[in-house]
Structure formats: structure tokens, C-alpha cells
Length: 429
Image 1 (tube, rainbow, N blue to C red):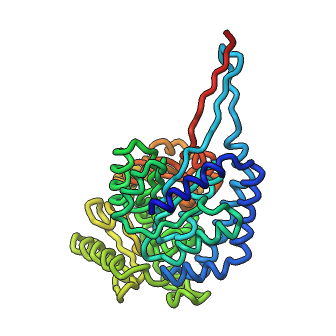
Image 2 (image 1 turned 120 degrees about the horizontal axis):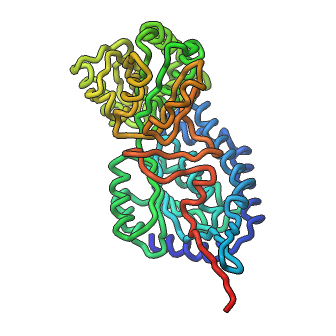
Image 3 (image 1 turned 60 degrees about the vertical axis):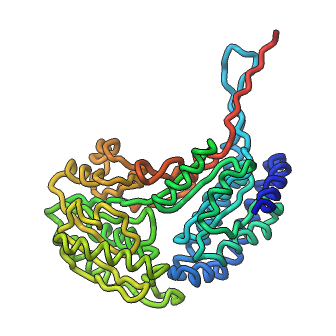
């Protein structure tokens, strides 16, 4: 591994001096590679972690989008900032740090990497990536894609290492920062190592997002969004809606509509273009989900739909009468399980939403979006979406608070995480 990091550092010494126009051209070439080979790349994602092929295609297309977004905007984001002081000249520049480590998850094996690597590279850094062990083909292919696009050797490097080797990489003197997307336990371990060596750390961890449905919501439209919010990627997403908080006056109607909508979903082979729900990525993940559901039922949750596991497939499941002490409410459920609770007032809904150790995002559905605006500051979340599911968008900062981590990805904020904010002050004697 030392030789790979040495190569990445040597590449950095040249790459940081590459013109902005050259970097832009490479980012656009990267997008072109993705768009020309979308289906081929999507097949690899589906083969490795069973994501429905249509969703894998969308993931690759989103990576092309983020490449194009930064290609068009990174120079403006990194532009010198003139600041008026008592000096003859004073300004701030944004300069790269060096080699940045990415520790990436399996659930979006392309997207999670691209949203970290593209802005980090365009800022003038080089990146080394420790990907999840169950997506090795994706991991190696990503390096090949960057190299095919024309990025110099060593600017993007796949590290075929195990989790217990990450600490040594963080400690390496050429590595100047680390970005991790993953579990709370992985985030803690990385943060400890980064802290030991005083290195910048960005953590995008779990989520337990609330999906709040007010009594005046358009139920037909809201149910359609709610299906996608929970069932996309078989529920294996940090930003998926996991706790459904429904106004008690419409609870029965919403639940009936939602259950009927789930029953219409096509379950099957992930390679089939009609499939909407496939298996989970691993059997141990399905077993963990099964345990969370069973414990919640033992504590009084009512099983309305599903609840059965076969190997690594867990059928879409709906639970009602959920209380805050149940695992499906207080823990992150990484699979197609819906936990429904009711509320009487919006203030109660906010209290229930905030009754979580996570703080990634929340969705609120109402016809009166203006009225709900006054409550936005009361949510303990990194994002508030009104009449839309929580999602990542290259144009908007992405990240959370509390046990959902710290730091931000995407937008201008994302490219600023791994730069030296340098102050220059010039005055004559």
C-alpha cells in the first residue's frame, strides 16, 4: 500500500498545478465515459449488490450529472476572494491539501464515490479509495473509468485493503484527510484515527428520516412519493424515509393506500427491467432487519404486511402502532420496512421526528407549504424537504447532524472540505 500512496502523492505534486481548463475537460470526459457505457456499468452494480437494473442505470447517470455540475462550477467555487482590509492587498485562496482517503459503502457503489472523488480531484487533490469488500468489481472499475477519462495515473487509486488496514492509511504522512460514508461504528473508528493524527475528517453516516404527512396532504401524490422514499434500493439507503408519522385523522386512509401501493410493486430478479424490489445485498443484513422487526412486534408493533425473510430477500413490510422505544423507530432499518406512527399536532410530529439520535433529513407533506415554513428551524436535521422525499442533489449541500455525522458533500460546500483556506495579506513597509 505504501507504494500506491507514494504514487498518489507523486501524482498530486503535478496534478495540483494542472490548469482549471484541463481539469474541466477531464471532468467532462469522465461524464462522457459514464454516458457511453451506462448499461455496462449498471450491470456490474446489479451483479454485485442486487440493485434493480433500472435503479443502477439511474445511479450511473447521476454520476455523470455530478461530473458535469462540478466541471461547470468548480472554478467559480475555488475563485480567489478579495477582502478589503487595511492592507494594500488582501485575499483568500483555496488550495489542495494532498492525498485524500475515501472509505466508501456498497449501497450506492458508484454514486457515493463520485460525489466524493470528483470535487476532491477538481480541487487539486488526489484520492485513494477503500471501497466495500462486497463490491470489488465496482471498486476496480471506478479506477479504470477515471483513467479512461484521461485522469493521470495515481490521481485516483483503488486500495484493495481490509477494514483493519484503514488506520494505517490514515496515519500515513502523505494522506491529509479522510471522507467516510458508512455506519455509525465505522464513522467512530475513522474519526478516532483521524483525530489521533489531526487530519480533516468528513463523515456521512446513518439516517432515520421521518416522513411526516399532514391532514391536508394530497394523499394520492404523497403515497406515490412515499413508496419511492422507502422502497428505492430495497430500502438500503441512509436517506430513505424510515419513520412514517401520519396525522391521526388520515392514518387509516393513508395506511390502506400505502399498503395497496406496495402490493403492486414488482418483486423479482434484479436484472429484470420490470423489477422494483430485489434482494438485499447480503444475508446478514436481512437477518439483522428480521431481528429488528421481530423485537418491535414483541413490544407491541402491529404487522400489517410482510415480515418474512428468505435468505437475503426481505419482503416489503409495514408495521403500525410504533412507539419510540421500538427498534424500528429508534434504530436505522436498512431494508424495506415501514414503521408508522400517528400524531395529533404538527408540534407533536416535530417532537417525534427529533426523537432520534440521527439527524440526516426530514420530509413534510402538506398543501400549505407556507404555513409549515415557520417550523423548519425546529427540526434537528441536515435537510428539510417539503412535499418531496429527501434526496441528494449536486447543487445542494448534503450531510447531517448528531449521529448522522458531520461535514458536507456536494455543492460548493463539498469541494471546500479538502482545501487549505489560505489568507494572503500584503502591505508595504
